[in-house]
Length: 198
Image (cartoon, rainbow, N blue to C red; front, side, top):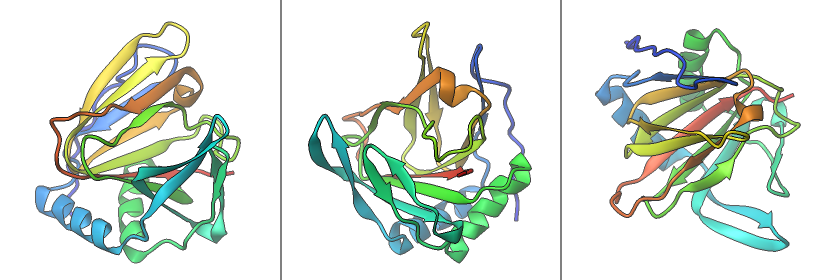
Protein backbone atom coordinates (compact mmCIF):
# COMPACT_ATOMS: atom_id res chain seq x y z
CA UNK A 1 0.00 0.00 0.00
CA UNK A 2 1.42 3.38 -1.01
CA UNK A 3 0.71 6.41 1.13
CA UNK A 4 1.94 9.79 -0.03
CA UNK A 5 3.46 11.91 2.72
CA UNK A 6 1.98 15.32 1.90
CA UNK A 7 1.86 16.77 5.38
CA UNK A 8 1.16 20.47 5.68
CA UNK A 9 1.70 22.81 8.63
CA UNK A 10 -1.17 24.05 10.77
CA UNK A 11 -3.84 25.75 8.64
CA UNK A 12 -5.29 27.65 11.61
CA UNK A 13 -3.62 30.87 12.79
CA UNK A 14 -4.47 30.24 16.47
CA UNK A 15 -6.69 28.33 18.92
CA UNK A 16 -6.46 24.93 17.27
CA UNK A 17 -4.58 22.70 14.86
CA UNK A 18 -5.66 21.49 11.43
CA UNK A 19 -3.36 19.56 9.10
CA UNK A 20 -4.17 18.68 5.50
CA UNK A 21 -2.80 15.68 3.60
CA UNK A 22 -3.58 16.27 -0.08
CA UNK A 23 -3.78 13.22 -2.34
CA UNK A 24 -2.73 10.96 0.50
CA UNK A 25 -3.98 8.00 -1.54
CA UNK A 26 -3.06 7.16 -5.14
CA UNK A 27 -5.93 7.96 -7.52
CA UNK A 28 -6.65 4.31 -8.30
CA UNK A 29 -6.94 3.52 -4.59
CA UNK A 30 -9.14 6.55 -3.91
CA UNK A 31 -11.38 5.50 -6.82
CA UNK A 32 -11.59 1.97 -5.42
CA UNK A 33 -12.62 3.23 -1.98
CA UNK A 34 -15.20 5.64 -3.41
CA UNK A 35 -16.89 2.90 -5.47
CA UNK A 36 -16.82 0.41 -2.62
CA UNK A 37 -18.18 2.89 -0.10
CA UNK A 38 -21.02 4.19 -2.23
CA UNK A 39 -22.18 0.63 -2.97
CA UNK A 40 -21.55 -1.21 0.30
CA UNK A 41 -22.28 1.19 3.16
CA UNK A 42 -25.69 1.08 4.88
CA UNK A 43 -26.63 4.63 3.87
CA UNK A 44 -29.72 6.28 5.36
CA UNK A 45 -31.15 9.77 5.11
CA UNK A 46 -30.12 11.70 8.20
CA UNK A 47 -32.88 12.65 10.65
CA UNK A 48 -32.39 15.62 12.97
CA UNK A 49 -34.55 17.75 15.25
CA UNK A 50 -33.93 21.48 14.98
CA UNK A 51 -36.04 24.26 16.48
CA UNK A 52 -38.72 21.73 17.35
CA UNK A 53 -38.98 20.38 13.81
CA UNK A 54 -38.24 16.86 12.56
CA UNK A 55 -36.06 17.19 9.46
CA UNK A 56 -35.07 14.41 7.07
CA UNK A 57 -32.03 15.51 5.09
CA UNK A 58 -31.22 14.70 1.47
CA UNK A 59 -27.69 13.96 2.64
CA UNK A 60 -27.22 10.35 3.69
CA UNK A 61 -25.24 9.13 6.67
CA UNK A 62 -23.97 5.98 8.35
CA UNK A 63 -22.47 5.33 11.78
CA UNK A 64 -19.99 2.54 12.50
CA UNK A 65 -18.15 1.94 15.78
CA UNK A 66 -16.56 -0.52 18.18
CA UNK A 67 -18.75 -2.13 20.83
CA UNK A 68 -22.00 -0.65 19.51
CA UNK A 69 -21.14 2.89 20.64
CA UNK A 70 -24.01 5.30 20.03
CA UNK A 71 -23.65 8.90 18.85
CA UNK A 72 -26.10 11.64 19.83
CA UNK A 73 -26.31 14.93 17.91
CA UNK A 74 -29.07 17.32 16.80
CA UNK A 75 -31.43 15.66 19.31
CA UNK A 76 -31.11 12.24 17.66
CA UNK A 77 -29.10 9.13 18.56
CA UNK A 78 -27.34 6.91 16.03
CA UNK A 79 -26.81 3.26 17.00
CA UNK A 80 -23.59 1.87 15.61
CA UNK A 81 -23.05 -0.86 13.07
CA UNK A 82 -19.89 -2.97 13.39
CA UNK A 83 -16.91 -1.87 11.29
CA UNK A 84 -16.70 -3.50 7.86
CA UNK A 85 -13.36 -4.83 6.53
CA UNK A 86 -13.28 -1.86 4.13
CA UNK A 87 -13.68 0.69 6.93
CA UNK A 88 -11.08 -1.10 9.03
CA UNK A 89 -8.67 -0.81 6.11
CA UNK A 90 -9.16 2.96 5.83
CA UNK A 91 -9.08 3.33 9.62
CA UNK A 92 -5.69 1.59 9.67
CA UNK A 93 -4.33 4.23 7.27
CA UNK A 94 -5.56 7.03 9.53
CA UNK A 95 -4.12 5.36 12.63
CA UNK A 96 -0.74 4.76 11.01
CA UNK A 97 -0.35 8.40 10.02
CA UNK A 98 -1.78 9.98 13.18
CA UNK A 99 -0.49 7.43 15.70
CA UNK A 100 -4.00 7.64 17.17
CA UNK A 101 -6.51 4.86 17.79
CA UNK A 102 -10.04 5.57 16.53
CA UNK A 103 -13.13 3.69 17.74
CA UNK A 104 -15.86 5.12 15.49
CA UNK A 105 -16.62 6.61 12.10
CA UNK A 106 -19.40 8.90 10.86
CA UNK A 107 -19.90 8.77 7.09
CA UNK A 108 -21.69 11.37 4.96
CA UNK A 109 -22.83 11.04 1.36
CA UNK A 110 -23.47 14.32 -0.48
CA UNK A 111 -25.08 13.54 -3.84
CA UNK A 112 -24.09 16.89 -5.38
CA UNK A 113 -23.27 20.49 -4.51
CA UNK A 114 -26.86 21.30 -3.53
CA UNK A 115 -26.20 19.33 -0.33
CA UNK A 116 -23.87 20.71 2.31
CA UNK A 117 -23.44 21.20 6.04
CA UNK A 118 -24.01 24.37 8.05
CA UNK A 119 -21.81 25.80 10.79
CA UNK A 120 -21.17 23.34 13.61
CA UNK A 121 -18.51 21.84 15.87
CA UNK A 122 -17.93 18.19 16.62
CA UNK A 123 -17.80 18.81 20.36
CA UNK A 124 -20.61 16.67 21.75
CA UNK A 125 -19.97 15.25 25.22
CA UNK A 126 -19.77 11.74 23.76
CA UNK A 127 -16.61 12.71 21.82
CA UNK A 128 -13.34 12.73 23.78
CA UNK A 129 -12.56 16.39 24.48
CA UNK A 130 -9.81 17.94 22.32
CA UNK A 131 -9.25 14.62 20.55
CA UNK A 132 -8.12 14.12 16.95
CA UNK A 133 -10.67 13.71 14.15
CA UNK A 134 -9.40 12.26 10.86
CA UNK A 135 -11.59 13.22 7.91
CA UNK A 136 -11.22 11.48 4.52
CA UNK A 137 -12.73 12.86 1.30
CA UNK A 138 -13.66 10.78 -1.76
CA UNK A 139 -15.36 11.99 -4.92
CA UNK A 140 -16.04 15.60 -5.87
CA UNK A 141 -13.65 18.29 -4.61
CA UNK A 142 -15.49 20.51 -2.12
CA UNK A 143 -14.67 23.73 -0.29
CA UNK A 144 -14.45 23.41 3.50
CA UNK A 145 -14.56 26.47 5.76
CA UNK A 146 -13.53 27.18 9.34
CA UNK A 147 -14.85 30.17 11.33
CA UNK A 148 -13.46 31.25 14.69
CA UNK A 149 -16.18 31.43 17.32
CA UNK A 150 -14.97 34.74 18.76
CA UNK A 151 -13.04 36.66 16.08
CA UNK A 152 -15.23 35.30 13.21
CA UNK A 153 -12.10 34.94 11.05
CA UNK A 154 -12.62 32.37 8.28
CA UNK A 155 -10.21 29.90 6.70
CA UNK A 156 -11.05 28.07 3.45
CA UNK A 157 -9.56 24.89 2.01
CA UNK A 158 -10.42 22.76 -1.00
CA UNK A 159 -10.72 19.10 -0.02
CA UNK A 160 -9.59 16.83 -2.85
CA UNK A 161 -10.47 13.27 -3.80
CA UNK A 162 -8.33 10.92 -1.72
CA UNK A 163 -7.26 13.52 0.86
CA UNK A 164 -7.30 13.52 4.66
CA UNK A 165 -7.89 16.47 7.00
CA UNK A 166 -6.90 16.25 10.66
CA UNK A 167 -8.59 18.44 13.28
CA UNK A 168 -6.82 18.42 16.65
CA UNK A 169 -6.55 19.90 20.12
CA UNK A 170 -8.90 22.88 20.76
CA UNK A 171 -10.15 23.15 17.16
CA UNK A 172 -13.70 21.97 17.99
CA UNK A 173 -13.91 24.20 21.07
CA UNK A 174 -12.74 27.36 19.31
CA UNK A 175 -13.81 26.98 15.67
CA UNK A 176 -16.92 26.09 13.71
CA UNK A 177 -16.67 24.37 10.34
CA UNK A 178 -19.01 23.95 7.38
CA UNK A 179 -19.32 22.46 3.91
CA UNK A 180 -20.83 25.24 1.76
CA UNK A 181 -23.25 24.39 -1.03
CA UNK A 182 -22.30 24.99 -4.66
CA UNK A 183 -24.51 24.89 -7.76
CA UNK A 184 -21.43 24.17 -9.89
CA UNK A 185 -20.87 20.69 -8.43
CA UNK A 186 -22.90 17.84 -9.93
CA UNK A 187 -20.87 14.86 -8.67
CA UNK A 188 -21.17 13.07 -5.30
CA UNK A 189 -18.74 13.28 -2.39
CA UNK A 190 -18.24 10.81 0.45
CA UNK A 191 -16.74 11.95 3.73
CA UNK A 192 -15.49 9.67 6.53
CA UNK A 193 -14.70 11.15 9.94
CA UNK A 194 -12.88 8.79 12.29
CA UNK A 195 -13.38 9.77 15.93
CA UNK A 196 -12.55 8.91 19.52
CA UNK A 197 -15.77 8.41 21.45
CA UNK A 198 -15.76 8.39 25.25
